[in-house]
Image 1 (cartoon, rainbow, N blue to C red):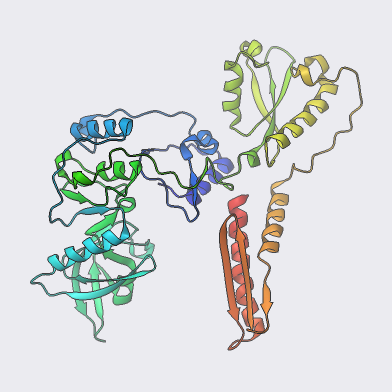
Image 2 (tube, rainbow, N blue to C red):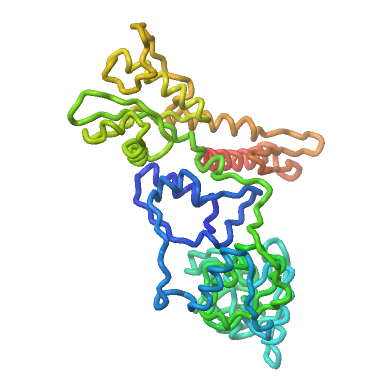
Length: 446
């Protein structure tokens, strides 16, 4: 469920500081909702394999598990077959509901708000959520869902808090008190929504120890229904319309499938040339890899076809020679071949890369390949690239300064008119946003 943006940040920190990473998760749950139509298969991606080369499936221990054995059995069979044969109790009036469609969420939430505020003093609030306006009744004691991070108030997205009190201030405006913190009317409507019904993506990560309803089961795919069902602590807490269950559920793949993001880092951006030496002989092996070098050495000493396998008892040591950021496997191979030729002159028969050693002595003038670049050069090239694509344009007829670009399928647009402000002021604003965006894009792709 971790968005690609934050997974990228984590991977950048890992490669820079060589951190020890532990990841815990259930890969059967919903995939991250990304701003593009790309799907990132973290479980099979090389960057995640580098961060966590050893993977262990945790055993189900009832006393420590979220859900009971009945739920576990149902979920295990569901993951294998994609079908559910259990007879659930139908939905009933409840303040705990999960769904797939936002349309369903709005409808169920409104019904619950009306039921909760019946015979109570209430206020009608027009909430702003995901670009839409939703009008609902609210009153004291109602449970609200936080919709954005508010670090200054020590409240974070997806937390739930009850309304402690609603009061009018001296100006006649409403104040809402939640968890001892006062929110103005505008802050409240932009930071919360009633939590009576949430989508399955919002349900993810939570635990329901009370009965709840699941709606839109016919619209969900395998991962979404699995997520909704696995939130419970007891199977008999789940209420849904069994007649609406699909005969078989599959994983609904987005239209474009990739194993890693183009800037999470492109596999070959992490290319490097390495050498392997030995404790008791003077032989040498040159190779290339986009993986963690120790992991690459483990492959060598366990693969019989590798030149290192015969010398694995001589305590092989792997050492990086140079970083070689490239765009594909062919480029990495060309850089590797250049280094093999370079070292073959010096090591000759001691070099284990036999097939790449020249048959006769030929003086080779070694030159660095253009694709081997320092981090500073890489950064400068990226800034130049994005600067060209985000070039500021002038529309004198409409007195408008703007840039409008599409990068990796995502649109970036900013404009400023110089009707009420000077052209210099408008240019300053657009330039500032342009430079901020260039810096963000450069950091993501470094």
